[in-house]
Image 1 (cartoon, rainbow, N blue to C red):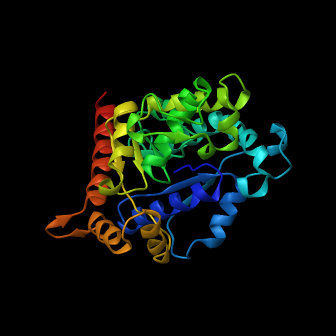
Image 2 (image 1 turned 180 degrees about the vertical axis):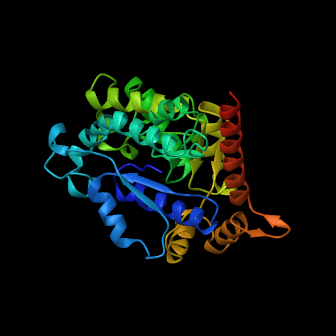
Length: 300
């Protein structure tokens, strides 16, 4: 598991890792830079079985302040530089995967690699070793579908109006320019961050699947977009939360009755003898796909 270096990304990854750990079926390796790994190590419960692995990174080599390893430690205007700097992880990540495969003499490859949204390039490395690769969207499908479409298409540059439609996502209805991030609002396709984001997001076409921290019944339109644009294997596995108190906030954010939304969520994550909810089934489908790829890569 390899999230982008931001708390809003690391925390949902951690919630997913805890959920997988509870099954006692999988060995979990959590990859990140030294400072983030040290912070994780100090916060994990003493009985945790996670393998924490550091990936080399020197922020000073990328025109960032010394010891910059998380978006929390830099101003907003430096975040694009940090995103671009993560491309330097490629050779180190390849060596890490190669070492994991070598440890098992190639007989038992890692089952799957789950990475953050800016690390679609990991798919190429995973496939080199015959390993399943999935991206994990830590938030909702609909919002990120809009974000993805806007960066790839930059539709606000094609109209003088403050409102516009997304050419590949008409179901999203009209977007107002004030809803865009500062960087997206000024993006024209030729600026350095536009070029970077379009490179990063187009690499999603190589992934084997996408995990989304959402519930199928509440996010059908967003999930439909990614199944249509990227790949059919898009699994809603949420909600993944580190604290039960977060569930109350989730209901309010959905814009529907808190009680109704919580009933839908509870049904989605249910795993009983005669019933599995949609999120539980989705996680099963993800692992089935990963096992299938490992089987065929071994036979090949």
